[in-house]
Image (cartoon, rainbow, N blue to C red; front, side, top):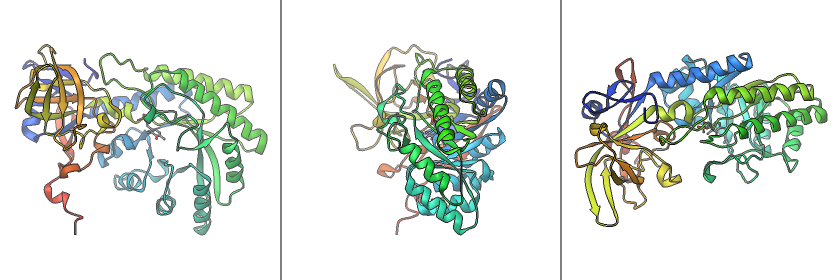
Length: 432
Ligand SMILES: *Cc1c(COP(=O)(O)O)cnc(C)c1O
């Protein structure tokens, strides 16, 4: 029901996640609090892994794009579900390694990896480094040579695809800070640099065409463009690229009207397109990787807040203020993202009120949703924002010195804390 199968309404009219009563959770763990359904996360992991098994003979790997929600427990879950991890910083590598994640299944992305991060990645045995620019290639090559190792690399390609989504999160077109453009010849130039560079092994190509994409066609097209480029590389350099990383970007439901593509509906046509291209260009079928982030964790969490002040401005709007806001969910202020808002303790009541959910920070733009239809709310109610599992906690800040919320996971009816609520002491721990 609602935006995810993990949500329901119990006999008391309360919203539940993974079967647990969110009103009880709010009372016991305080608010704001982010609650995940671990079973639902794992189900998503398995759906992606199974789709590669079913449509691509298991000749691939699913990488969880850790930036969507990174913590030790998420790394453990991804490992347990036989996935790799897409990491984009030294901090994400550190988190994964601390969780006991096998380094060889880490894929290191990013458009401006620092010298220290590259060194750290090489020293810890990170499986693949996805090269974004020629400067990075020289650093990787020099550092690998220094320590007498060979770095396995991919190159990030801009396939020039316009996936229809919000401009800020569209990354496949030529005007992007990520990767090498095909059209300008830049990509082929760097392939040649990589082929000739010492102590690096160009194993694969990577592309990521955007996020929150509801359409299969751009993914299929990206796969075709990448296979064509693999063929061009073979023709120009003789090198056969054996791994193809197609990125993430699968859309999820924020609103009940959103219609995401099912995982199967994605993998089948993409697999077919790759196999066809392999035949057409006389290439081996590559090992593929996909990097779902949002679609693993996004719809499987809710954030619970307590309602404070309610300001009804006649003929203007009604502001319902909550005890969190842009500090735990900056996506509305960043992208005007859609969300479904419910009153957790009146979830069975009709949604006949129109409210603007306001955070507690000193910014007029600190809103979670404007003029959204939900139940009527008053002070003390528990307000639930759905689909807050991806790019919420991971983008959280301490603006106004607001401590980050606790993060919980529900599994088989049991609730565990996976990230403690920050304390005031945490806020000053680096202050001198
Ligand atoms: C952000 C990102 C992803 C995950 O994107 P989602 O939209 O969360 O699936 C995957 N790969 C790369 C390189 C990314 O930057």
